[in-house]
Image 1 (spheres, rainbow, N blue to C red):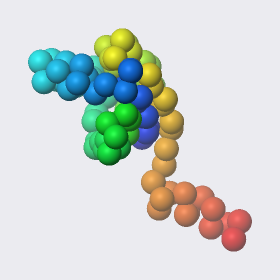
Image 2: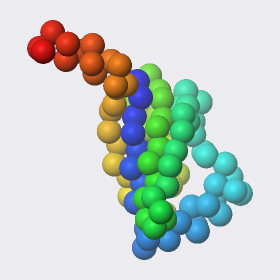
Image 3: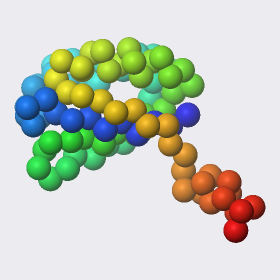
Image 4: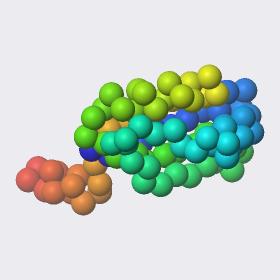
Length: 90
């Protein structure tokens, strides 16, 4: 399953997040895979795609970072999958 993670940097400050990442890596537990990420131009939010078969691994990962940001976790599907699911209703 794919998940979109919207991370809001605490105090709009990405520096502590980047410091921890440089020192300790992504801190993702086994079974949680990083796919890709983007950061808004104001450095207030990070948008990440993560993949896992075990939703609880996302909670474990967020625990490593929750002191530096707030997280929204959204289950997502690809546009191709969405089009296939919607096709019968067209």
